[in-house]
Amino acid sequence: MGEKVFMKGNEALGEAAVRSGCRLFFGYPITPASELAEYMAYRLPQVGGVFIQAESEVAASNMIYGAGAAGKYAMTASSSPGISLMQEAISYMAGAEVPAVIINLIRGGPGLGDIQPAQSDYFQAVKGGGHGDYRNLVYAPSTLQEAVDIMPLLFQNAFKYRMLAMMVVDGLVGQMMEAVEFKYDIDPDSIPVPDWALSGKKMHGGTKNVNTSLELDPNKLAAHNFKLFEKYQKVYENERMFEAFELEESDIDVMIVAYGTAARIIKTAVKNLRAKGYKVGLFRPITLWPFPDKELKEYAQKTEHVLTVEMSMGQLIEDVKLSIFDPNKKYHLMPYPGGIVPTPKEVEDKVIEILKGGAK
Amino acid sequence: MGNLQVVYEVPKIYTGPNHYCPGCFHGIIHRVIAEILQEEGWDDISIGIAPVGCAVLAYDYIDIDWFEAPHGRACANATGIKWAWPDRLVFTYQGDGDAASIGFAETSYAAIRGVNITTIMVNNAVYGMTGGQMAPTTLVGMKTTTSPYGRDPKYAGYPLKMAEHIAQFEGTALSVRVSAFDPQHVLDMKKWIRKAFQYQMEGKGYTFIEVVSTCPTNWRMDPVKAAEFVKNEMIKVYPLGVYKDVGDEKKEG
Ligand SMILES: Cc1ncc(C[n+]2csc(CCOP(=O)(O)OP(=O)(O)O)c2C)c(N)n1
Ligand code: SF4
Image (cartoon, rainbow over all chains, first blue to last red; front, side, top):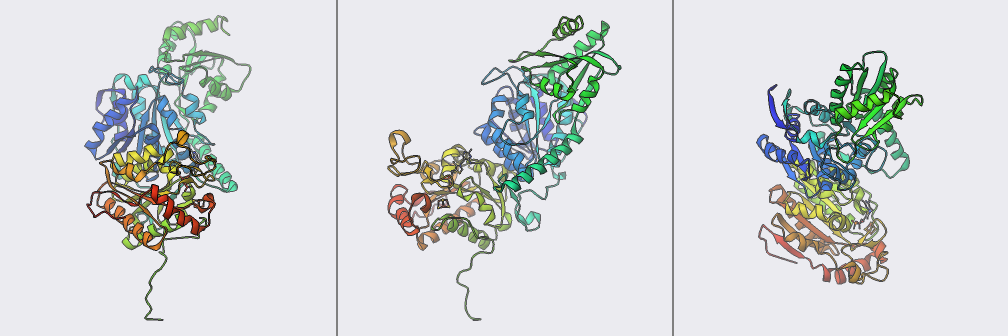
């Protein structure tokens, strides 16, 4: 406990899941997520867990769907094309209120795209890539340490709210070697089996449990949807996470909004700009859903210029604008699609350009 | 009355009434499964996986834990459930469209991987629930709503024989094709489903039971004609029998 170890990102994510109490992993290889599956294949048998290489991401996601309905912590990890194949199970899990954890190490798209770090699955993750009205918990840590620190929360909240918790990180986080510290090691036997779990009648008082996403009566299905949205409202109220970096002053020249690796890079830009006397800060959503909209709006009061930097083509900025909901602000976008990572210098130049009045 | 013995009783865990059409075998197969689970005392530790198809509401008819799967994914869901609870009895109940078309990969891989679960696949040669479209099991020349001139191998290929397909895998412990068109065959079906569950409880591997069945509604036949069609036509293409049995039991039809 508490030791700092030098690990590859994907392996650290796997170890974090194991220490969160997860003993079931179902996966299918894809760059840049494969090492996570490889690590679980190596690690889980050592702790009495099970690793299954599925025949596809369709199958892998349906396996965690089954395991989650059976009341156990289960996880899969993939990258963008694989996550697209999981949308069926994701929608069904939302309908049937089945908890599980999915990690998306996003790569450049659309289509086969490339294998470079990206954030272009933002809409898919937060707006629902599958059919129907539903939400997922979506966490977007910006460092490996943060990803490791919040991993138990993903499992715990998935089970607390009976919904899918997704972690989205760009491929870079999985590939980087970094020192990480594990501050927890949860015994899976200490995790109670929920009373709704499919585990055989004798485990829950002899009355059968049924897990289904089917409801043929439209009135009942409507009621179910309202119930789900009450739950999502609770999640919205309780689970919004963000970081405000260098946003203390009452007036800020430019507020940058970014998450994940982009945010990590922008912190460097903010420090450099501050050294030159610019009052610049970063608002970093940690949960993409629920989106920290109230907080973003509040911080936006301090500034005229809001610059969104995202490794996608204008997805995050939609939520930024919706949150702030003020046509008098000046919104700027630096899109980095296709697997390109921003540099601090580019962001610094952009901020200076904005303040010179040269930017739209 | 006191000395009268109960010869047959509907099992307590078989709950109805069900929604199946008259002459459909789904109800009979459900009842047989319920009988076995009750007789063996497995109902307390069983988890069934219902399909998308006419049996989508199977969870209303047998009093055990149930999971309702997406179309075709039952074996993947069952794999997740089984590894969560390896000592439970886990079975999928699926139509032929579900298990052998959209779920062909998931079903095959349960066998390839030797997942210790049981699949009961109901082969009625059509997609019943959606109104009688062509299934992978539709007979050559058979008219369905998507093969109005009869199944034409030029476009649709040939009937898929799942019991034979599943038998080829080393992970398969039992692959049997049975039917239910007369009482003798119902008894035989019961024997093999029981054996499949037994093998599962003994950890022998994947077990697969294909039931050659009816769809009087979409075949546009009355129940008697439909049962005769199974006996006289379906079974020619889908011969009943044991295609694999690791328990080395004598083969029988
Ligand atoms: C992804 C998806 N595609 C299509 C359907 C529509 N659908 C429902 S049941 C079914 C076929 C069922 O046929 P079968 O598995 O043979 O079972 P039966 O109804 O004959 O018992 C289809 C295509 C669906 N529910 N989901
Ligand atoms: S439509 Fe066919 S398969 Fe479905 S219940 Fe009726 S007879 Fe049975």
